[in-house]
Every structure is written in C-alpha cells, then in structure tokens.
Image 1 (spheres, rainbow, N blue to C red):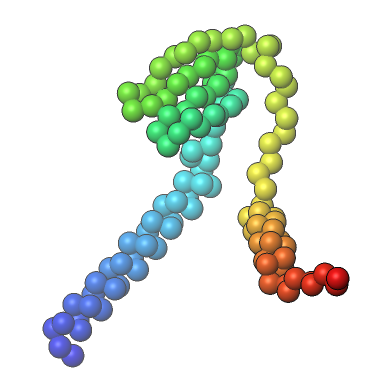
Image 2 (cartoon, rainbow, N blue to C red; image 1 turned 135 degrees about the vertical axis):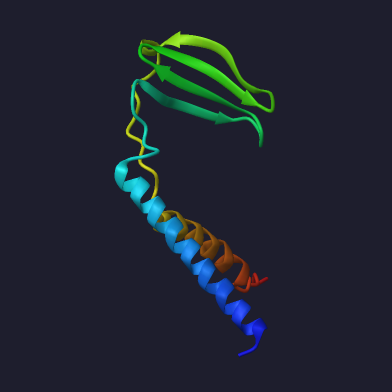
Length: 123
C-alpha cells in the first residue's frame, strides 16, 4: 500500500472517530437536559424585521420586556405588565412531513393547471 493510500485511510478513520465523538457528546447533552429553558425567563414573542434585526418579547416574572436586536446588540425598547398580554396559545410546530406534503400538494395543484391543455371554445 502506498503512503498516499495510507494517509487517506488514516484521515478517513480520524474523521469517523471525530464524528462519533461529536454524536456521543450531543446525545449525552440532550439526555442531561442541557439547552432546555429553565427558570423564570420565557420568550413570548419574536418579530423578525429583516435578516439582522428583530424584536423580542421576553417575560421575566410579572414583567415583559420589549427587546430590539440588531448589529449593535440588544436594546431595551420598553416594558409592559405580563397581565396585559393575551394568554399564550399552545404552540406546536408542524411536523416536517406535514409541511412537506402541504408544499408538494400546492406545487402539484399549481403544476396540474399548467400542464393541462386548454379547452378551445366552440363558436
């Protein structure tokens, strides 16, 4: 076996080991609950203004802070009492399969109209 082939095999094995280690660390972190929200802070709303700017509603205890985020960092825009917000509806993200089927369904419906030959009107 040439030195070049040995180098390629060694690189591939090292890459597999690093990927396996990353998988184990991320799996363990998820099992321990790292990254999950805890405490009295809760995100109540998010309004993206453009690619780099957004407004957030952050609930801390009985207060809700209106925070602007941009290139310059975070800026407190105001605060309102938490009681003035409407009750939070249960948020459930749509499953990927649902989103995909809706998107494909729309495209298929749009595509059917374009592919069908137009009927000629009789005089």
